[in-house]
Length: 246
Image (cartoon, rainbow, N blue to C red; front, top):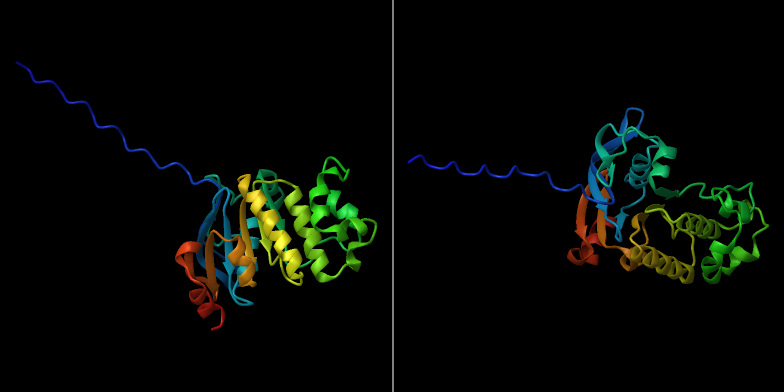
């Protein structure tokens, strides 16, 4: 009697691509200077990755690598498993990434109103009512040139513009810089609301108290490298401070 052949084992399947924004061993810098060295991290939908570190360690350079403003010399950036490396910043924006930079966060020569509505199909202000409720100063200064605002007020204007775009990934570079604590708390509330809707955030910060309110994951940098990374629940304040105060 001829024996029966056993059924072939099912082929192993590749794991599903990670949703959200992922960067793997990215490196880059300016000219011959490599500033970011082999950094990896991710922000899944509904999560905040806080990138911490002292001045000059490469945090803002990392953001520019993620946005495509400077090319990755190594590694790759993915959105929902799809590589972004060949896409320029406008194309990455069309994929669903919005960016609020640390420097020149607003268009100084435009009014507050125009800064808010410039990139919107609907130039009305109806969508901004929840933001004006928290930051009434913006509504009072709609017709004022943004360049006349204080540094902290410009940051508020920038984050309101960015969050109102309702993209699925938001990159914030030092959003709390120069902002009063009361308004920082309002920023934290807005981020929490957007997280609840599945938005992924990568936030560069030096204000640890603010980071502790919003972070799900930490990435602490020094000299362009990761020196501490992981879920917030596994990383204590003292461990972070040890690197920030070196």
